[in-house]
Length: 247
Length: 235
Image (cartoon, rainbow over all chains, first blue to last red; front, side, top):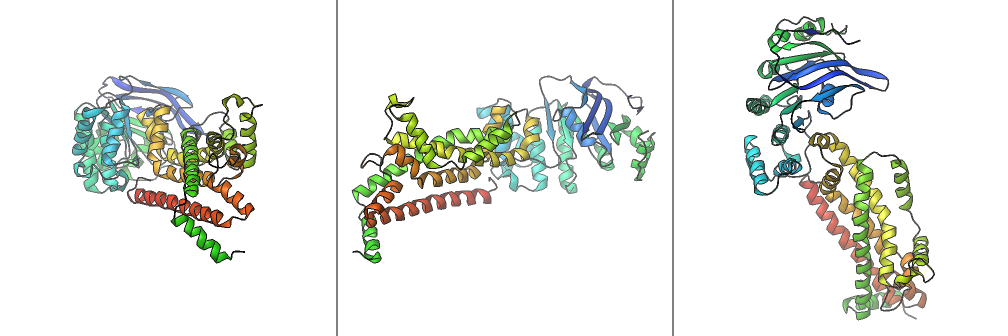
């Protein structure tokens, strides 16, 4: 049986991604239970919830990094125009510039056009002076900016971000948020996992609130964070521990 | 009868005067060893990368086989290649027995499992780090292998070095398939064995010193390259 979800009325843009009955189990334990969600095109959707709620797992299922135990994810964009930024940036053992070149090479772009795009993306991430530095020697904030630039350089329609600023200082966080918001203004749909309510208020249009592998609540940001209807949502916003059921 | 001091003095004399016979043996040794290592890398690197990066039925068996073949007895390989290349063997028509090519084939068979098994380990570790990013990029299997081999290139130098060490020190297989023919298939290790048995210790010792020196130089070069790569976070 699907979960009851407290769903707020919302302006329903065309979905770019739809998940139906998404369930994931491992070692005999279900971690996600029948998730039904739609990701609205051109919006910034935040996936929130306590540790272990299944946020990162849901993101991986939506991006296709893991196959669901049951249910399906239907992509309604063109090609595979998706990219993902991980909580810990994965830098190839190459220079910052070569990391960007690699992403473009995967897209089939070569020659001068590739070089120009890579340089442009480095500048956009304020890393122009680090072009030839080994990516793995950049600071955490620089690596994450490079990871965002590398994801955006492929011109995705949908960008997934898994707590991209969780270990960054406020200045680095601001730069990442600026990069993501700039991409959003250009029409990129954003799906981001975050714990940070302040960041959610700056970065979100919609919120999907997970609790214990279930969608406890979803709707516009102001509504979900302003007057959560589920007990799990209220406890989260108030900073209380809640171990009861999702609704 | 010569004293040990006399033998050593003569051996170093041979090295310093760079005796023509000596140089011929050293050059052939390098030619055979480097060719075998290059061929083994050509086969073993992609093979190890595929086994390291992908899950497929029988992967455990392939891994077990590679690990087992790392300890292949050289004389057994020599015998196998001999049987293949002898007139009665299926490849006898090629007329390769007692040629440097036969020695290269034997050494390639010996070194390939070493290169493949060590590559598998290096690539498996790196792939664990890159898996999700590669999946996110939507990379094809071929692109994954190419990217992994490129990013692990400095670590793989050590792998090639291990192969070089095995090949350059090998006696049994090259003796069987090469026949240790003077001016044709005589390499450093087979010459050391032969000259020692004949009591010509000066030449044997000179070649021994050169063999050690060669291994030292190659190791030092690879270590230096790898250290600089580690400092630059490319390894």
